[in-house]
Image (cartoon, rainbow, N blue to C red; front, side):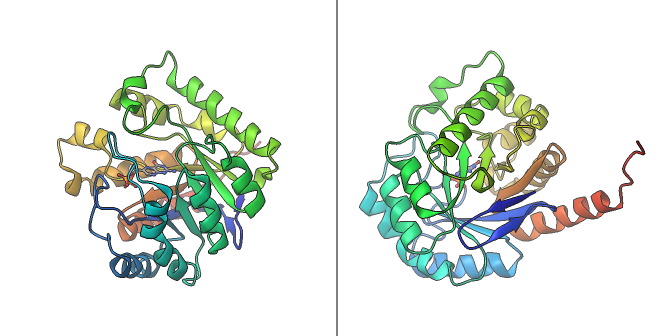
Amino acid sequence: MYWQTRRFRIDLSRPRVMGIVNVTPDSFSDGGQHGDARAAIAHCERLVAEGADILDIGGESTRPGAPRVDTDGEWARIAEVLAAAVRLGVPVSVDTCKPEVMRRALDAGADIVNDVQALQLPGALAAVAGGGAGVCLMHMRGEPASMMDLAVYDDVVAEVAAFLAGRARAAVDAGIPADRIALDPGYGFAKTAEHNLRLLAGQQRLAELGFPLLVGWSRKRTLGDITGRPVDQRLAASLAAALRAVSAGARVIRVHDVPATVDALKVWAAVDAATIPPSA
Ligand code: HH2
């Protein structure tokens, strides 16, 4: 399996690590740490040196209750960082739901659009289709400010699968080739801890939709609920969730802590390579 992006065809025969670059003052785990362009560019360089396969650059926090940023404000945060990141030799993703930010990012050389709103805003499908980018379509409901009020499901796995299949269809209908599309269950977005765990337990069903699965468990609140750890002490829990997600079909893991995740996935891939398939 592979994921076609603008400049790179990403081989997913082994799981890949997407390193998070939040150029924001208020992200839930690292807000303000890479808030100015110089610090964020240094962070990009560090993540690539540590083995990140993809960089994901975002200028707006999506944590529950986060305030909205307008188009120019979001672009001002990420423009310089993006321009430097596209010269680092790895695919660069832009984490945005705004069509105008997508267009500017693609003009600046971004390879992938990572949209937590799954290209639902007017003009978003066309921005990606016209720009030739890869895209990650994520499941959520509502807006970050209100999403936890919408965390009500009869069957979370079936409902997320139906939503993602529908958005993939909409993307293909808008002219985005199927091999450019990745899907994401949206752990932590309009979902309680119980929903997140149920979804991970049933995640294989999402992988069976036939698109690469990208997942983000890194440092998220459900891991704190399980372990009792604050956000800066959730590395072990994040690795456990990442490995469980890979075992259930995920091919791209979006993380803050790149070196530890790279090592964990190397071990997973080594065992995978040594596994003898059952004879027919
Ligand atoms: N999670 C966050 C942001 N973007 N994109 C995808 N595809 N999947 C995710 O799970 C996902 C995402 C939230 O994490 P983070 O970027 O660290 O925080 P914030 O949104 O507060 O900046």
